[in-house]
Length: 263
Length: 248
Image (tube, rainbow over all chains, first blue to last red; front, side, top):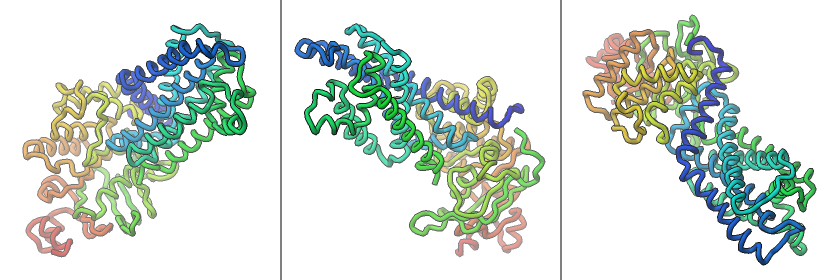
């Protein structure tokens, strides 16, 4: 390439530049919009639900309530941040037309998918870890299986980054993103056992809760952080991994097809 | 960037593209642009110019035919290789409004495979050439229309492409900026870059282009050197040739 480097190396330099653009130039520079609100909201959930309700709901399955909600809140932060990041950045770049710059570059569709997915994953993980840090200010909690907990965060970030990409590429207006965020993800998160144990639900609601894929992500995180879960960890990680694979495959297929990018 | 020893910078063979609603934008178009040429693509609105250009740079997928850039097909295994040989300055410039003017240029260079250092050095050079050095730290949406045009042209050149495609680069700009842009483009051509230019200003095509092609209804209706076309059609100016070809 310019100066004699090979094409493949140049393509990966492009991927790094796009990740840098997404993370450093957008997420970090716009932190009052991209990071602070979500971390603050999660910290407020810990304070309001954990500390206030914790006085009336002492324990869930032997775990203090204020500890019980931390993994779910962390996962909720990861999921909503990764989704919002990709849905917003892709729609904005398409709408303003500047996405044509990377799309007409030598990067392949798969490499574009890697770059945008990485941006959503990094923002999701940053939000998740900051949420965990903020929660730690108010609540003491153990970290029983660190690798499992990080894996749970990573799978959630991958799945929702992929879903954000899908929505960002399909959107013709801001409405789809808003619809999916408010009327699909948020209800699934709240019904996914973030604030309660699904075992405490009566039939048929306990069985219905198991149709919610976010339940498995929350339970995977709960196993990693607290060492206990309502769902077998193998099942939780299996479903989380399957969902991440499905979303990534869908988003990569859309890049290959040029959905919303090429006519 | 080494385009190899191909004597044809751009070859289009039977390129066809239809859009939903039976809108036939390109109808088996054939076109050759020799290496090093200053080539004008002219035609009325809706003739297929922008569809052709977007097909060349990979933003539109033709339904039929194929395109080669310095011998590399723009589809299949050589698509990425062909794209790095092209610099594209669109008419409706989408400029990233979240990064500064400097970053717009640097990021473009890096998307096209330049190292951070090479992209930064080339950016410094282009900021000077296009009189944008004092705007380097400004966001693009704070620039005037003329400055945005210069930035779009500069962006297309960061990775030193041997083929530069300019879609209506002077549309709607004042005469002073138009002359400045002509000067930049002429200098670029003098350095050996192949230029493919679309324009509505026929005097611009006559002044700049060594060879022009008229596109109508998705096909090349006529092509040649401007004096040759003027003589072939018994016209006085390129504008008369154009009017005859569009049936007026």
